Amino acid sequence: MIAVTATDADDKLFAQSNCGNYIAVAAPGVDIVAPAASGTYQFTSGTSVAAAQVSGIAALLLDAKPGLSPQAARKALLSTARDLGPKGRDDQFGAGLADAYGAVRSLAASPASAPVASVSTGR
Image (cartoon, rainbow, N blue to C red):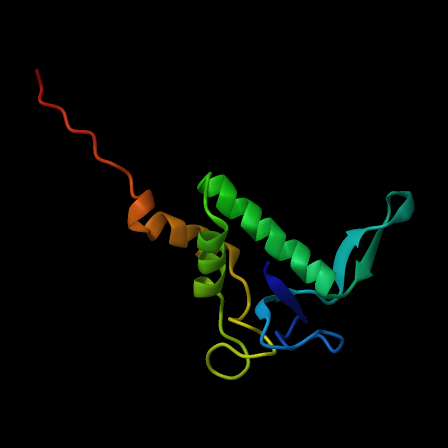
C-alpha cells in the first residue's frame, strides 16, 4: 500500500488532505482536469486524484521493468520524490512530491537492470 496526499499548484498541502506517519508521497490533486458526465470535463480536487497519478507512475515503473516487486516500486517512488515541507520525510508530504521521470530513471541506474554487454570471440 502507498498512501498518497494531495498538493496544489504551489506544492502546498491540499486543505482537505489526510496527514500522518502513513503518508508515503504527495502528488498534484487540486484543480485537476478530469472527465465528467456527457463527454465533458471538470476540475476536481482530492487525494483520490493524487493517488491516481501515483498509480500511473507505478504502471510506468512496471512497464519499464516487468516483474518489478512492490517493494522495489515503492523504493523507486520514495527515493526519487522531491522533498517538500520540513527537511526529510514528514507526516504531511511523506517522502515528498512523486517524480515519474526520476522514478523510471532510477530503475535504469540500478545494477540489476543494467544492460549486459554482448561478447563476441570473432570466430
